[in-house]
Length: 97
Ligand SMILES: [Zn+2]
Ligand SMILES: [Zn+2]
Image 1 (cartoon, protein in one colour):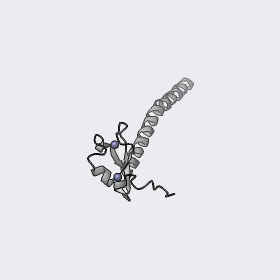
Image 2: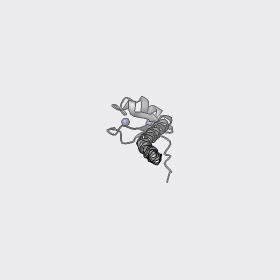
Image 3: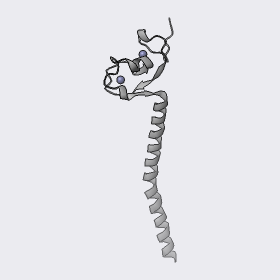
Image 4: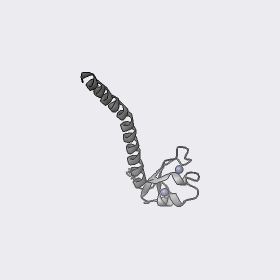
């Protein structure tokens, strides 16, 4: 049995074409979300979601941005708690004085 290469396009007409990335559109009409350069240029493929075809590099930076967002959010959530603890310490100090 021939081993399927996941990094080349599964479209028979695009044999040997290297996969460039994935379609991130959830309503994509194409059964295969990975696309090669030819899929990207084919007007019959990803008709309504050409803008959602993301290369591996773009997906990587998308994930990095997303992680950064989560990190920012976490810091924003933790900061007020941190600050109120500081305030409590300060007011305790005030009591001692
Ligand atoms: Zn293709
Ligand atoms: Zn698509």
